[in-house]
Image (tube, rainbow, N blue to C red; front, side):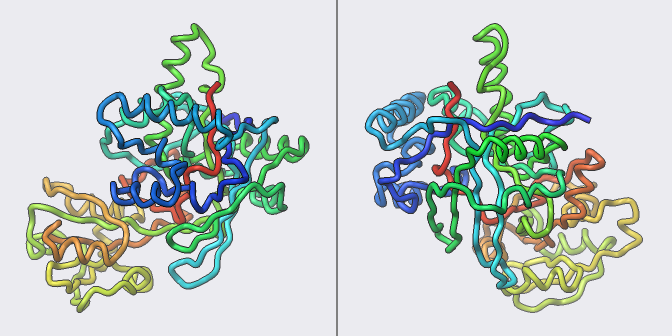
Length: 398
């Protein structure tokens, strides 16, 4: 069984004179143009000026990002740590059930392994996605700007991360989540964390495309250097233990196109028992779990409970995404993905889709099974929350 290297690094961080509330940002792939403008109006040094450069079109935008990064280092807005370290990343939030939750993971440099190698594992099939933007940005800045999210199979990793370390900064996000980062430089603790993560494979939870970009960049760097790629042999990764209390998993619902809600229901009739659900409400996020059923959403906002017929899914994994793929396997109906019950209802009502289907979150049991049996889930099977902020820790590749 292959296991990955997980190493500390000399991080690039914002100066203590700058508040992370002003300069950190959500992940690049959830930001609209309006979001970027709002963040920049908060502070001109907000990380989106580098991570999502939109001032110019074409290749010049990546040159601009690199120039800004160099300027911010030169003027002291960004400061390089004197020694390698790990960074503890804590999140305090209220989950969908209304419970106060606290999680902790560690930011470090995870080995970039070849596709199909055993040390770092994908957990779901990915959908086609343009990769040139992130690759071009990495080439120009020579920096990992945002982390991959990995899940460690090592039992007890969380216990190594609970004890506080040197405070570096904190911020609140738009959902009220408190993000706190702490620097770990104690040699014994650094060694223990590195060894723990490196004992078992790491499962990629979020950032499959970013990890693929890191592999391409590593290969390019190896070619350019005629050998080892140095820092590019690893990539910035947040690692948390794969246990219930350290993860909050929401569902990513399905939107269907080019088929009426009635026709879609007819396709499902062989595999699901259907009963009327009435108007679809945000509370359906938990009700699908309580009922053990999916819910079809019509354009008028009403729903239909879809209870899986056991016999129809005897040889299908216990995943709602897999159930839907099985039920529609002989059709060419287009599907897209949407997080949030109300977003699904609103999209279908506005004719952004013909119908939606609310599904249940993937269980920890199935995620671990994916890793243990080296399986892949259907695309968009998991939505890990809260999302990490971009900006608290950058990783230079020099």
